[in-house]
Amino acid sequence: MFASRNFLFAKSAAAAPIISGELYAWGRNLSGELGLGNTTNRSSPVQVGALNTWLTLQTSGRSNSFSVKTDGTLWAWGNNINGALGLGDTTARSSPVQVGALTNWQKISSSIWHTLSIKSDGTLWAWGNGGDGKLGLGNSTYYSSPKQVGSLTTWSKINVGYRTSFAVKTDGTLWAWGAGTNGALGLGNTTSYNSPKQIGSLTNWSNVSASKSSQQSTVAVKTDGSVWSWGINNYGQLGLNNTTTYSSPVQIGSSTNWSDISFGRRFCVAKKSDGTIWSWGQNNQGQLGLGDTTNRSSPVQVGSLTTWSKISAGYYQSGSVKTDGTLWTWGSNFYGGLGNGTTSSRSSPVQVGALTTWNNVSSIYYSMLAIKTP
Image (cartoon, rainbow, N blue to C red; front, top):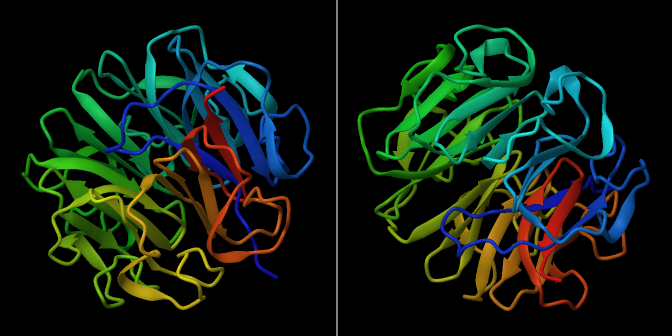
């Protein structure tokens, strides 16, 4: 039987501005990661509370969930291993709980172990498991509350992997820290670092996405629309038409119209500026959306539509919102993580309900969350 993943819908790098709305969740709920106040699995979208002020979403590689509201407050729920929720303890939560009292949180990225966040003032904050130096605080200490990474106010984009952390600054430079196993940091070596290190000297990086799998891989987009990858490549997840591991960025093909990327466990989903979506890597659960379960080591287009807007890759499933506001999912569905009321896995995109008001999507371990306009 296929093993599914939970979904939450997340802000895409090159998408139109996110609209706030109601929060919905479905899939596995073992640690309360759906935020519904219980641990009951759901196979269809269920609203989290009654508010319509949810703005951005982020789910971890396992069972942590975060969202920023329109008032700039940060909320967390789910598993809380090593204090990854940032609530000052290690107690799991099944409903959203506010992280501190500040109202200037803007972006959030989390793995099962650790979390990074950027505030509206451009400062960078980290908490959770500091092993391998992945918090960037110059040590390997665990913190259950947010700690500022350095003193800079020029951080723009963030994304964390299983044991790695990445960030783009406002000047277009790309930075990495944490475990360097299999060249996962892109620094040309396998060394681990406990503070941010610049990847090369280029100043045209736009966004970055890292695998939440322990087999670490990373993909990044430049401002010229080219896409690059590095790290382990045993399933072709780097999209380089081979299974060779690389410790420095290597360009995927020659296209220069990539606009958004989302790394799943051992696979990647990416969107081009023409509204098409492409996928590559491991496909044992149909997570590539290509109508089969065959692995791919280079990008393959998912269908022929040019109306895809947002993308999100989970462990063994994927989701996307179209420009018409419809929501589509595919891949593993063991816990109902595809949100279509069943537990049958799908290897091609299937619409979730009939609504046309979805505007944001992100994926967890075996679950999903989404935001829709009321």
